[in-house]
Image 1 (cartoon, helix red, strand yellow):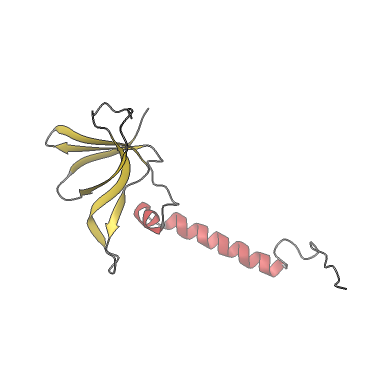
Image 2: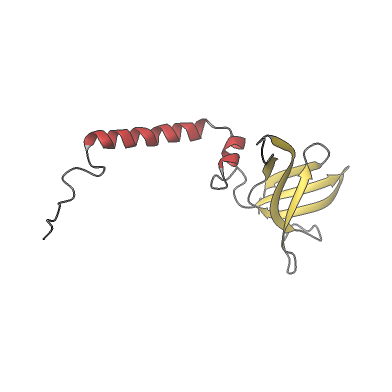
Length: 130
């Protein structure tokens, strides 16, 4: 017959030394994540949301005229090379295409994938104030 081991005599992480090591590792990880730039955090993964939260708006302009608007964007991602992992000169994301440019998601307007160039596209990206 097997004996039953008591749990709890050695603390949450087994021993005081092990607990200190785990706590130190967690603190170091937190420090590294705080020290990263926003772009680096975005590249780490979608689990780190950028400053827009989950309701961003992207407006695309041709000169001074608004030509496209995307609503409910959770983040824009800078494209990276598959093998080189270097940043490419365009961004992409998902959002609801505001077909009538009224700033509201209307019935029939759906979520789409979009891309735009950093070099040649005039755009404004902001958190929806509504």
